Image (cartoon, rainbow, N blue to C red; front, side, top):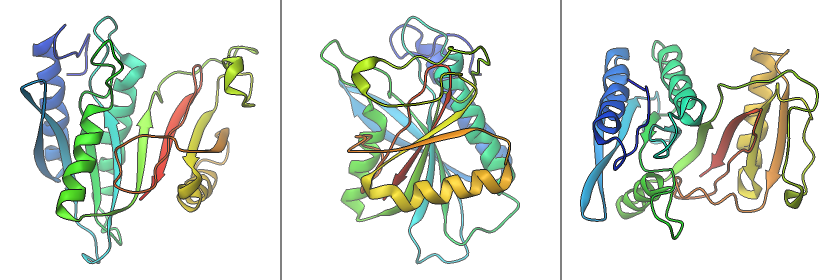
Length: 235
């Protein structure tokens, strides 16, 4: 269940239950599911990796990811139970098909801030290190983050002035941000969104060094407060 606080210290039982929920849902869809362990501060945690085989095993995989942990003080409904729900639904829709390349649906753990000194994205960095050690690249990663909230009130979208970016001022859009190495992946995502849901407002941006750590090569993220995030990363 993705209900309530899902933090390893503040709510360890719900944190583990969230991990197991993601694994059960992906397994029920028919994916091969693995709990990929990593260590943080002497304890073992797991990313959940559900794999859909591709037609061409020689091609690098595409990763679709969303983190299932929350901060210690919030239930994390939008950040990021909404991303996990979208991840599972993407897997459900794609599972009856055979994609050209392997697709990995990954529930990421410990992505929220874990220390007062600013340690976060622990699970995605661990996954990247493991892939590098095995020599496994990715052709891209789409990270789903905060996709469940919308506000159609004019002026509802607020952006901190120091960011220096222009976005719609009504928070009813999907934001897609890629770094400079993931332009092709970002453009492919935008084309797919327009073809599939032409009425969905999408605001895109190419940023320098989105710094995710999830992919072993090029990466990217999105930002939005009232809006919704999708984060393409080219790998």
